[in-house]
Amino acid sequence: MHDTQADMHRILLVEDNDDHAELVSRCLEDRGKRLRIKRLGDGEAALAWLEAGAARPADDADWPPELILLDLRLPKIDGMEVLDRIKASEALRNIPVVILSSSAAAGDLEGAYSRHANSYVVKPLDAASLAAILDKLGCYWFDVNRRPALG
Image (cartoon, rainbow, N blue to C red; front, side, top):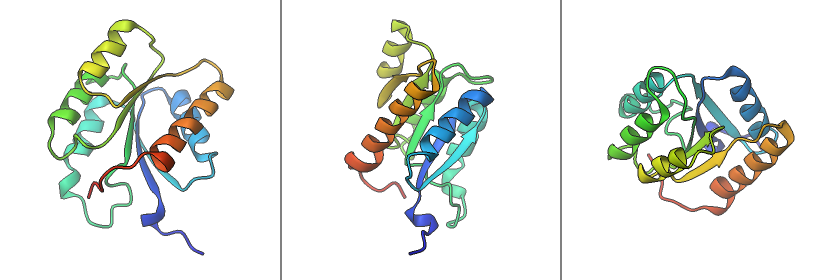
């Protein structure tokens, strides 16, 4: 049986660190699920891409993302501002946003949830632990969680 683009789960990864982005992408792809990961390296690019969503061609395989993995420490526009703008947008607010950060600071955690993050995950330092966490994350968001279609 041939997988179509419609069978793919779409993830937007907003991460400025190339090594972290590669590791996250590899861990998610290793789950054996049909995932399509779009990576953007700064907050400004992420917002521009997301806010242009309604104007995308119908055959854009990356749109709409079913999940956003968002780092907090981003160039140009930081992750908290990106989160604020996503959750303030009627067109975007229903896309789940998981903060994926190396910060375990209480202020970051509280700030993310006060801005309506759907989840907050601290990136562990070793690849095996990160892979285990991402496997659970993928399992939850794509196999367990149910939500309305996005578009």
